[in-house]
Amino acid sequence: MASFEKLVEEANKQQMSLGTAAARQLATTTKSAPQMQGISSRWLLKLLPWVQVNGGVFRLNRRLTYAIGDGRVTFYTTGAKVQVVPQELTELPMLRGYDDVTVLSTLADRFVQKEYKPGDVITQAGQEADSIWLIAHGKVNKIGKGKYGDETVLEVLADGDHYSYQALLESQDYWQFTVKAVTPVTVLMLKQSDFETVVEQSPSLKKHLEEFKSLAKKKQDPTGQADIELVAGHHGEPVLPGTFVDYETSPREYELSVAQTVLQIHTRVADLFNDPMNQTQEQLRLTVEALKELKEHELINNREFGLLHNADLKQRLHTRSGPPTPDDMDELLATVWKDPSFFLAHPRAIAAFGQECSRRGVYPGSVDVGGHQVTAWRGIPIFPCNKIPISDTRTSSILLMRTGAENQGVIGLHQAGIPDEIEPSLNVRFMGINEKAVISYLVSTYFSTAVLIPDALGILESVEIGRT
Image 1 (cartoon, one colour):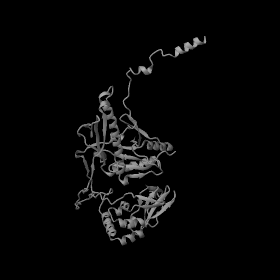
Image 2 (cartoon, rainbow, N blue to C red):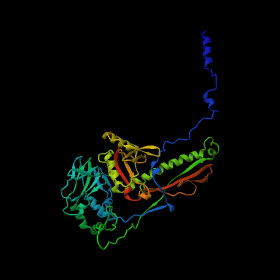
Image 3 (cartoon, one colour):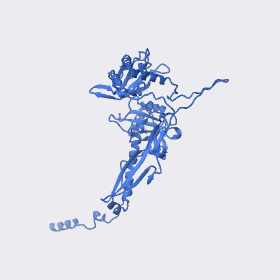
Image 4 (cartoon, helix red, strand yellow):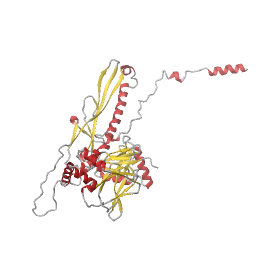
């Protein structure tokens, strides 16, 4: 009996029909196209108005602006000691264009390092203003009197910012504001007496400062442009002012940048393995997707034309407390107040903003953009962009821009109509077949971006993310 049951068990183990593994060899499977995780929404490429650039160069003409400098200063450290890079002192308005490195080094050596804790007062309103302060690290608040006598934060300063160079050029003046540390702060301070000593020892610096003071006296409008003299509300027949609109004599030119790669495909693959999907087309499709991702990354991060590096320094703000709050977003809107088009932020920064809104019981709205419901603030959509970097200290940036040439905004630059074009300003050119039977295609895309006037782009910097 036992032997009979054993025979039945062995019979059941024997395969009675064709297995699925073997059957799949004859079946036609349903296949997906090759997928690629790196493809993002690329909102910036979709939203930027693209301007045709014939000849590959775009010249940006503007009204003459008296650029007396308002840049940020760079520092270097030796252990716990912080020093300003001498050449970086030319970012200060009064030293813009001055090139005597020996004198700059002497000035740099005269700066004194000071440390402050959160809540410490660095300079007090009403006290004598007899020094310039450079913020090497940390964040401070400039606090002044509001309309009704209450204290209000006038400005937030952080790494590389400075105040106030006027103190070195004037005598017997007083601080009009209080500066208080928000975080642990490292600053460098130069006394007016030390500065004047260096000036007396350097005829070239003395001459440069005289020219600077002369330039500062030229008539300017509130944006620093050469003034256009007009008159209104007059009666009778007074002599009307004569005027003209001056232009920059050396306008900036943007040369189209390029992103390229060589796509290589073996002829055996291209010839034999094209059913049901064309291998060459799929390889090309994914290569183009990768180039578009790189294109958007460059439009934001490129040091020559990228938006993060081309915002005017007066259009850069710092958060008041760290994470992006509704107050910070309102202040950013105040910098791009003429018809703002959209915000652009890393998804983590958008999440941080949402957390701050929830913390305050404020709920952002949404707007419909091409069938997509997009988070909005004050009716301005906030689009996600994973190309905006997150630093090692878990901070990022939020951009706000006005777009379009007709609005004097931010525009994309390209040249459509190039040879072998498959999309505007993107082409694929056959390069031949080598002795190893490998086909090569050169895939190229040409692009750049320009900010037509400074107030078209604003950036909220040092945005903390991931705070609980």
